[in-house]
Amino acid sequence: MTNISRYFLLLVLMLCTLTACKKDDEGKNVVSESVRISAFSLQADSTIIENLDKVFFTIDLDNGLIYNADSLPQNTIVSGLKFTITTDSASEVNITTIDTTYNYLKQKSLPNNLFAPAQIEVVSQSGKYRKVYQLKVNVHKLNPDQLYWGGVQYAKLPGEGTLTAQHTVKYQGLVYCFMTRNDQHLLAVASHPADEWQITELALSFTPNWQSLRAGDDVIAILDTDNNLHTTTDGINWESTGTNYAALIGCLGSEILTLTRDGDNYYHDKYPRPEGFTPQPISPKFPIEGFSDMVCYNSNWLSSPQGMIVGGRTTNGNLTGALWGYDGNSWALLNNQIPVREGATFFTFVTFFTDDYWVTTELPTWFVMGGLNDSGAMRDVWYSNNYGITWQKSERTLMIPGYINARGYASVVVCDEPANTTYASWQSVDMLPIPQGYRKLATYSSANEYLVPYIYMFGGSYSIGTIYDQVWRGTINRLRFEPIP
Image (cartoon, rainbow, N blue to C red; front, side):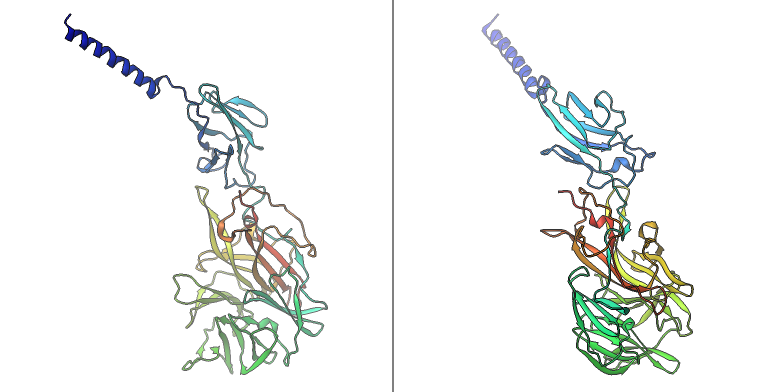
């Protein structure tokens, strides 16, 4: 064999050796030591609940936690849940639940009783390394979308003496509660209704019709019992405008919207009346009394704020349930789906919608609660989450509970407060604890604490001339859930 042939054979042997070593280096003989869980999901089972396989689970590798931040609906049956686990070539995946322990890789179809956190132990391919994960399938312990009034307490309105009239408004960030007790006219002011009230006895030169009171950005207006208009900027010092109106509808900014009467005819009017403005005749369907407080709203697609009222009585004395809107220039009938009533409580709040992928969206929502009709006090609730275009009668979760008496002419203000606050001086119907460990939408969060919008409902009447001396506090359960850290 020539030298060249020998060198060629030696080169071939070296290349073969290098190739074999490279295959080993690329993983042919390398054992994985990973104990990572790369994916976790529930298996679909429509007999338990729809879209189980779309529930998102967070995998916290550092702390060994697996959980669903968006909880499953209340009363979900978790004893038969099955799941899918993906690892990086683990040799064992040992599952320990309440009543069993097994190797998931050999029994993937086994149902799991997940009433309590389960333990998942992942063993590396070599068996040298192990990591334990805690699996928690969160299920709501109460209905997250229920408007809840119990536990969140009720109290008497501020002040002492027999209450004969009241009207409460939100004005410049504070709660202004105007009352008549034992023939004394009072103003109570607080940052929120469970705070300490600053009560002032009002020295009025007129007899107020508190039911007519309306608040704007920088003015509060009221009619006296002779229909003369009075205004104030602080709630204490009042001035007579020297004008007379049939009704106050509401305040849009600093503009006071009114009704003027000339004989049997009524006109839309304003105070102060703009230069060149001419009062316009009202529609026969427009209410002249008993309508709700005016709700104002604005949005990016509106050129100016809008105002709305609901219900009341028309010039022929008939009740209406219509929704009327004002765009800064004229009034229009927007909707007539709500049953007839006067003294409806009309306010804005939020509701929530959860889609098939378990994504929860907060929806701005308008509420109409209670009122009086010719048969007495009402307790139904109507809501719209498309800016009043359509209305729905609320399902059970948003109804006024039986322990709150039906009423009309109640006042509502919404105040943001720290979550789960209770007040020792208030009474409670019942107390449903809010569990920890639920995702909280970020809308009401801050750097130090998250705030919850509470609905405060003041007074209200079960018939004309009677009044409840009480304020109730309620909110939607979901808003009180504490966030997962």
